[in-house]
Image (cartoon, rainbow, N blue to C red; front, side, top):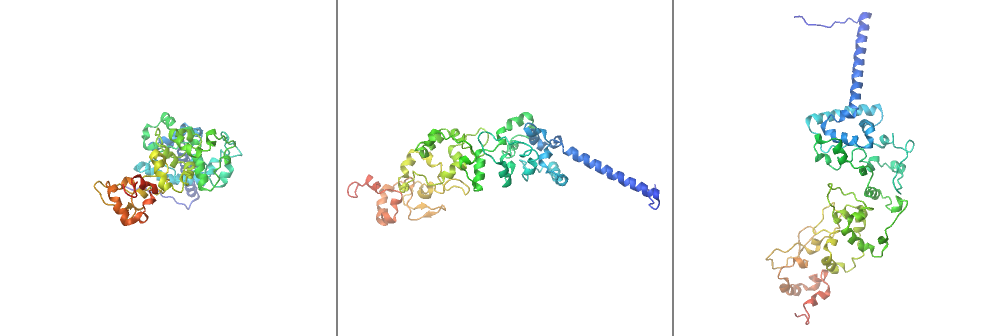
Length: 395
C-alpha cells in the first residue's frame, strides 16, 4: 500500500495562496481555542471543579466578593500578568493529578494593593470605617502595608490560616458549611493585629492615635488598678478582651486561660515584661509570701522551668533559683541547678528541694560554709533563723 504524501509546489501563485490560507486558518483556530480555554478557566465554576478548591469556592460564594470572579483578585491587571499566571497554572494541574498539593492550600504571595484598589480607593469608593476609629488607608498604602494584612478574611474567612480545611473533607463543603465556617468579623483586623504591626514598625500605640474618643472605665482610674486588674482578669478575661483583643489562634470553642491570653497579647505582655511595682528591692526574699497566697498570679509572667526560646514568659523562672526536686532518699546537699540544667555546687536549693533531713544536717553545712559563703540569705531573710533558734543560737 502506498503512503499518502502531501506535495505542495510553492512555485506557483495558486499553491502559495493555498499555503497562506492554510497557515492563517490554523493560527486562527489555535487563537480561538486558546481564548476559549482561557475564558473557561477564568470562570469560578472551573475553580471548584478541582475538589481541593471547593472550600475556597463556597466561602467565596457566601461573602460580599461573590459578584466578582476569582481571577479579578488573584491575577494582577494586564495581559502579561494573565499569560504568566496561565503558564504557571500548569504546576497546579500537576499537583492536582498527582495528589501532592499542600494542606491547607495557601497563597504563595499576597494580593497586591493595586488589585484591591481597582474597586477600593478614595477615587471610586468611600472607606466605611466603623465606630470612632481613625484609619488613614492612604498612609498605610504609602508605607507598603498590604490590604490583606488587615483584611485577609474578607473573601474566604481565613479558612487556610485557621486550618479549617484540614478538619473538614473537601467534598463535604457546600454553602451551608461555608456559612458556618465564615465569620464576617474576620474581614476586619483585631485590635492586637494593629498593635503588633505598630510595635514592629516603631509606630505609636497610644489609644488616641487610632480612636477619636477614649472612654476609660472608672475602675481603670483607681489608684490600685495596676494591681487589681489582674484579679479581674482572672475572674473574667472576656471583660478585658472587649478593648484589648488578642491574636492568639485557638480552636473554636476553646477557653483561653488568663496566662495564655496575657502572653498572646502584645498590649499585656509589653507591660508584664517590665519590673512590677510590687517587686521591691527585697522581693527575692519576700516573694514567698505572695507566692503562697497566689501562685497562679506568679505563673502569668513566670514559668516553673526554663521557658522556650520563643516564649513571651519572663526569663526568670522558679527552677532557676529553686532547682529541681531532690530525689527521695537523698540526704546530702548537692547544690541547685544552673541555667543550663547542670548542678552549680555551693548554691543551696529552695526549701521545697532541700533534702528531707535538711533541718537536722544544715548546722553542719552552715558551720563549714558560713551564712555568707553558703549564700543562705539570698533566699532567706535574717529573721528566718530565729523561727527555731530562739536561745542564743540553740533550739
